[in-house]
Length: 214
Image 1 (cartoon, one colour):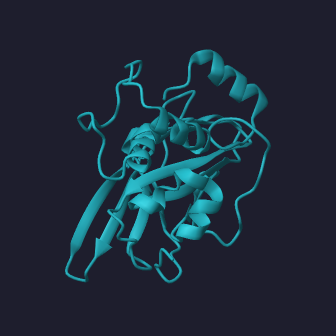
Image 2 (tube, rainbow, N blue to C red):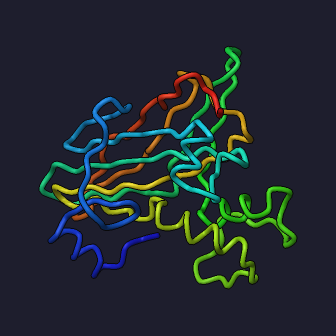
């Protein structure tokens, strides 16, 4: 997921925003949960209703198999590119009122595609964090789901100066949508790309009206 130096140079020079990496600029809705400091803003939009998920993902709807999609938007108003460590982003869930706490890692699009294509479990052994360059067993059904999901996923780790990136992260909540106030997206590791200067962590509580999947 690390951007090559050439891609970094292009992003620094051009800026821009899109699902995944680059497309037409767009602003996040002002009423979404946000965290802003040091010239960078993060907004989050949790898809908690099956109907909304179906409208966005069609047959590849992650909610149908208990996976929560979160649309994440990063905007950089500074003059320098910002790098985020995608691998350390987590969904923090506090539930039950008894101090129960769970940190959930996000799923790769291929993992989500496999879950949607084979809701009763894949025929091949379950794998996490598919290694880069690994050839996957042929699976036409999974690949059709992946064609839908991959372009929508957050797959850039560089926020260009005066630009933005946007995309979905997917979290396996086993079909249990957190109640309002229970879930927070936590982004601990951001740096100024040109100097490796660390920025403050970002966190935003998910907006979950009704906490319903219907």
